[in-house]
Image (cartoon, rainbow, N blue to C red; front, side, top):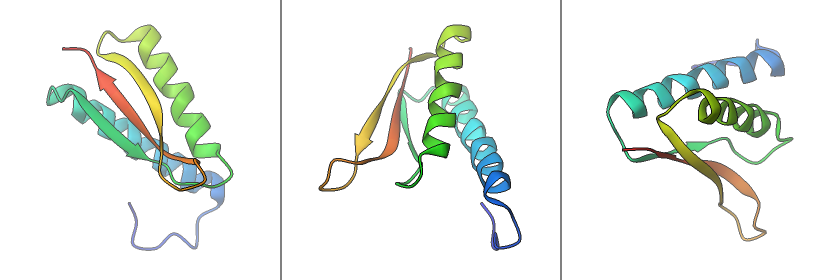
Length: 88
């Protein structure tokens, strides 16, 4: 997303990550991909929560999003990504 991020606050970083995620979802819909994966990482959970809120809103407002689910990426079963399924 950025070459340097040290000058940004955590809130500014999350805003940029959400913006990039929205662009990714728009591209999935535009390109008619059946699914996509958003990697949010394992941390405090702010980005994951914001993404889930956004996806829930899209599912209510948008006919393109079918569902989404967390993907467990580590041995402890922690989720670091969300898989998004789109309607045909």
